[in-house]
Amino acid sequence: MPISIQALRLGTSSEYRNGSFYTSVVCLVDAPYAKVSATLDEVDAGMKESPTKSIPWAWRNLGQRRNPDGNDLRLSENGVSYDEKTSAYKLNMLVGVQGDEDPMSFVVEGFLHDYHTRYGNTLHLQITKKIKILSNADFRVAASPYGANRTLLQLNTQICFGWFFSMFFTQKRYKSVMEWRLQGFVANLKQHAENLK
Image (spheres, rainbow, N blue to C red):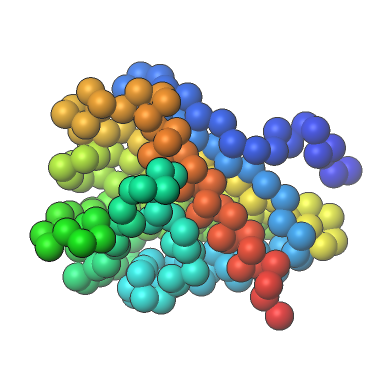
């Protein structure tokens, strides 16, 4: 028997506890589970190959700040490595602001897993090595069937900023910098799955 839509707690919520920000984004996708699962598989393959080149649709509209006078963020990568046996993941990332000549370089290291079970498909990225802005982070996006032609899509994240950056990240600032981007990422997955032929 399917869960009622009210019991699903659709929408976005964020909270701060024990030094980390936790966000949940839950939506229903008007597409069969097979299409949403294929979308997650596409993201998984793209993350292992070249995130900004293989799956540019996943990052659409995520670089722009909410402030209309703000500059656009630019994301690119210098290389990706993935070990099939250990799931170890390494991404050399460049993050810059439009018009800025010197983008910042980050090396993101952790583990990337893709789980297929009879209950659904889950993509899990765990960042384990500290970088300039993050101490650690955990991202899980999951799809599960919801009737014949709909799918439940859920993103759960835990983000712990580095000690210096954490001084500036109030709940309000987190919502204006991160939360809307996480919502946008889920919206991009939803739109991509619904448009698949």
